[in-house]
Length: 270
Length: 330
Ligand SMILES: Nc1ncnc2c1ncn2[C@@H]1O[C@H](COP(=O)(O)OP(=O)(O)OP(=O)(O)O)[C@@H](O)[C@H]1O
Ligand SMILES: [Mg+2]
Image (cartoon, rainbow over all chains, first blue to last red; front, side, top):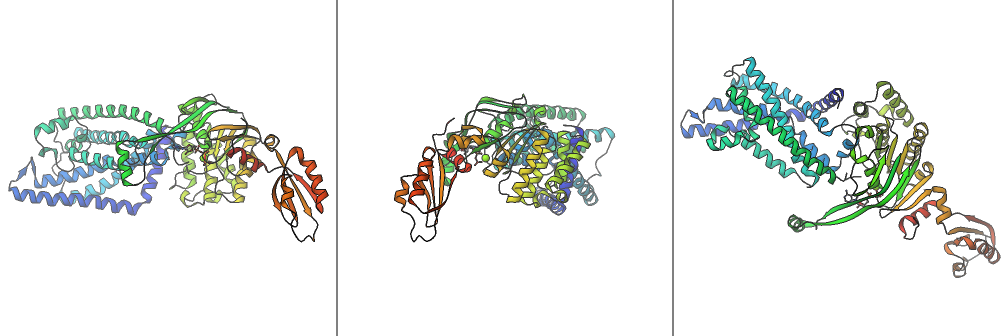
């Protein structure tokens, strides 16, 4: 894959994505307003029920800021739903054309994924600014160049980890007709264990220790805490290492699973 | 350029009984059945040669093509295309081959063809000058220059097929697989695609394997044909030899004088050969080759004949017979 091909894919995908503007904005607005509003209500109830000012280390407003940031980070990490295309392409036989072309399907998909990220970036900017105007989400964050760099790094790694994690799951389509339920399950799991539904601080310490060695929190919770400066530099460094190790492990699993799946592939549809 | 030796492919199918209960049962115990789609096939194709791969539905044509294009792995046997094993998918090989499928779109549906081509230019690393020349020439010949900026999903089947051809040939492939390129097209679109393939073949001398159910495609493009039946080769040779080798009968036809009130008696004609048509105006028979002269003489002497003709069997019919009836030679 040449850099030029990479850029061509990028620009093509961006043109495509922006050509569905209406859908794009409706889905983002709904996707943003609903979960954030929901957590706002739930936590309001919990805070007033318990009568305490601080729960799991968060004040009510701190909690709201966390949810908004997790949503923004999630947008950036997931970059649209484009990765489920892989299983569709295996299942309906569109993979065939990529097998014919002299290039790597993996890198082609990464280029196209990055372009979705670029679009998510626009969303994050718009909604981040709005959220800041309403909730002052950036007020408590002190931006030092080092923290900023660590934040960007954590985001990029989270994004790549998310990309890599999708592959073994998508490859199941080589054997199984329907990977939709698998998608739903892993999404639920990674939201639950990654700190999207509730901040990980509400879990007991023993469970949190286990989670530190699993990949999920490096997708959502970890980047947020790096950006808000909640992690110490030792924690940050350890997080990077654990994340990198998972990328390598999943990468190896993907290679093996994909090679076996590929032998199964029958190029249906022609 | 293409050498195939004892290539076989067996598909494993998971049998699932219909209905919800069937689905649940298949979760516990999956029954697999084996389907031998291609069975010990050997042949070779040289530079500049267009070989027609024929066979009934399900004979294994597409499966052979898929293996030679490197999309699927064979169960056993060998193949070499330009010196590479296709399913190892060496980029140096992939840059020199093309597969065009009438049944399956390869272009990106949401893009206009022009954008698809630009993407392919980067994928195949075609240099700008060659790319522009090729695109200009191909789109002019196929008459689709005005459609280049139309989103692919909005093109008609025939227009899209022409775009698929351009897309597949932009990089001047030396090996081209055409799997039913004219399926579903109207007569004139079929003709223009045929002529186009012919001119591409003259200029570039690629090795071409063509499958088609339209005899016109085969007769226009292929000197040599390979006929598959149930995964095995039953004929590999020149198209013109098919008639000599497989047609055991000729068609004897006579026109009769007007004025007869009834058709001739078929009972008597049956002894000469299989009766195709028998009316007051005309009689047509399949007659074994050795008996053509005798049968003609008999007809002349017993019926009021005004005109007699002896025709070769239709090559399409002969091929159809080889494809479906057991007993063809290999
Ligand atoms: N992906 C697949 N999985 C299982 N069996 C398959 C698959 N593809 C083809 N087959 C079986 O293999 C046999 C050969 O199929 P193939 O597609 O090669 O036929 P074909 O000669 O191209 O037929 P057609 O003229 O209908 O296109 C058929 O019996 C078919 O059912
Ligand atoms: Mg076929």
